Length: 570
Image (cartoon, rainbow, N blue to C red):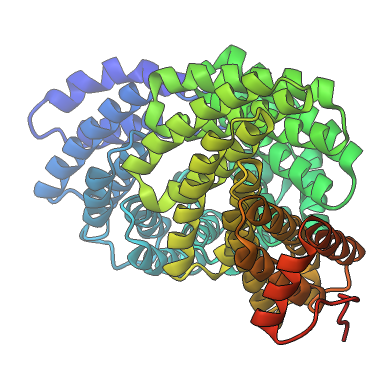
């Protein structure tokens, strides 16, 4: 390509002569050669320069078509398609779509060729970037069909392939949330690339890296962790270590793949392997930060988050704290330049660091860090409520727990009530997967109220949590909610016992007996030993404090004598 660039000053004067047909077409072809990323062992020139070359080639090709020179229609279609590709790389999606559609209306666009297939391919990406997924899928299928029917020409080697079209189709399916279909197409694409010659594979090393990286991400989403690990091994074998130096994009893909691979290895049960792979992804991301901080730091944040998770699972808490602190610093740098994009990530990182503070007994620091994360999350909710309200509810619930642990019962109740209100709203709008979180956050608010001596309010929370969990057990897997139900019932027992004590202390005998009745009814719903023991203790305390008053109130309210045995199993 360098030799072709050296010819440009020679060809321009020739092309400038009015009506010189050969000079104009030769210059247009040379400019297209220079503007395309032709060759594997060379880095392409800057995008701005390539765009300028391609725009000049488009103008020359249009002039050639207007003079009805032979070969000009094909040259125009190719130049327009390549112009669309470069506009996509520059993020100018509307212009890219227009250029791609122009290439498909060139005079010879009806002839099956890689030029028309490439036009469909560029149209696919432009439509997808403009969030027109249905149209993008149609264009992707058209591109695959066109490549399969086209006769390959050496001059069009840079204009994509069937594998590139399959990758585009899989990518669009993934963006549309059709992950299983996307993975199926990715597998087909990977197998097609595997069958190519070594020379052809070398030319398509970036495409193959992209396909494998995106395939492992889809497999991870589907929970096919064993298959994801196999794809990771395939990537290591097919991408030599020197390739990321030649193609920086492959370095980014390798880092992203290692992150997904680490999550997959850890999810498959090999936590030590997951940690080792996460450490490898961190090292790869650090190298990227040296060469290209703007591209490397977001990936480094994801890698650090993955490593912190595995260190937590392995109980390596001292190392986890170091990594969590670096994760916060990384997101802080990113949030300076783009707070809307990286603010939510910083909030989540702060929440993880707060967990480390809590574990180390640093309660006030934990609360302060969590409060900072909550404020960042509120900003994200104001910008995009649908996306971030669930995360805000989670962080508010964590803030409630951490405030309660520092004896700030009032603050704990306020955070717990807000977190529960958001969660109720999300569940009420049709989010069935949110209903278990309602029960969890009822228990969190209940514990905050219990710490603040609002025993009746705490008992109401725990009773509602029990009701929600029983409904979930009736409609789903009962074992998934057994632990939550036991925790709610144990907490309810304590709250009702405390409520009975409080009512008696204030002289409210009827209210105390009402709490005891609810406590005895609880023993009929559970076989938990601590609940039955707590019930016996509560009745004993009440009888010892005011045997005559509680006995009379019990008979009046139940029509039965004071119970001598409170268990009612079965």
